Amino acid sequence: MKRKSLLYITCILLPIQFIMCSCGNYSPASISNENDIQENPLENSNLSGSLQMVTSAEMVSIAGCTTQDGFYEAIKDQDGVRFYFTDYKNKVKTILCSNPSCTHDDSSCTGFLPNEVAEYAGIFPFQDKLIINYCAPHYGVPSTLCQINLDGTDRNILYTFSSTEIARDPVITDGDNLFFVLDDVNPETAEFISYLVEFDVAECKVSPIFQCTANDFLVGCSADKFAFKSIDSSGNYQLFFVDTNGKKTDSEISWMGYMPSYSTGSSLYIFDSENSALTTCKYDTLDYKTIKIQDTAQIVHDIANSMIDYVCDDKLFLVIYHEKNSEEVGIDVNTGQIYPVILHGVNAYGEKTRPMYIITEFGDSYYVETGTITADLSKRALIKKSDFWNGIENFDFINSLS
Image 1 (spheres, rainbow, N blue to C red):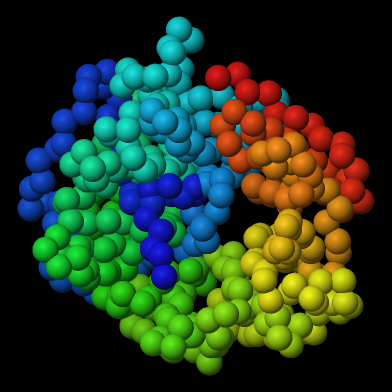
Image 2 (cartoon, rainbow, N blue to C red; image 1 turned 60 degrees about the horizontal axis):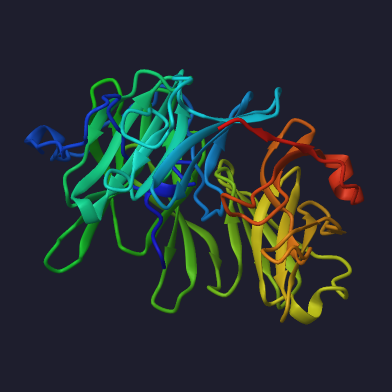
């Protein structure tokens, strides 16, 4: 299975890293023993608050994180990575740079990282700041975490990992600290050791909690435990949990590798196309239920060629791939009722043949991508959820000011 680094989370969509606010060229920081992972695991770790997801555990086309005010994202193009904020209220997307005369194309811009610094990058909000994670392995730039103000000012490096360490999404927080999986790669054999770690933001210190295998993937959390899925030699999955002291607890939840699954961070959804069934498991209680999906006649011929695209408002968005196009339906996770998604996005040829891509939700609206997911043809918009489900193209388009 492909691993997702904290770098291009598109929510932390990638190796975790940050950049300095200086206008000079980047030079790799020297790695000292202070940046090495602490030898002894945490003992009797006390959370400062309930665990919460910060970035998505799922691979997404548009990586970013939403807040009550807007959406932060990292967009990769030919010359580097640019960081943007979409203001929901004013319906504008701007680059995270406070200099009105900036051209946003060199290292003096706080909203831009060139390729030689950031081949991969991501961004997410933490407390009253933003954290940027970036790396450029082909240029010798290791995974780095930086901190920046919400307006794009005062960018500072928090932590630089060693050249063999790669931080992976998703990121989880207890309000004061960050938790994620860190891979330590042997450059000669390409083998790696993985740890669930705690990153103490105040002390800039990394401490291991639990040693993972190469087949363990962090997918979510309850208030005080981390949820992992593990893949076995047959390609099937098993869910297990780890507390903050590193104690592992197995669960009864398992599923076949061909079944699409999706983790929202607090719940796991498993789609069984052969039996037209949907299983939901809540990480906090471990309660799970399986429901039959109603009236699958309209999609049953291609239902096996499907993937879960998004889950919100008690609806699971299922993309079904046909020979020449694809469609999307919403499935009520409580009743199994199917809701057709009438609206379609535009492909590279101007044809409405692909699903409308939902980036995130905001109040009674969805934030959507109505065009192709490319920098020059992308069209972002807010649309009321009622209009979306009724197939009404009442888009409130986002104006890009960058």
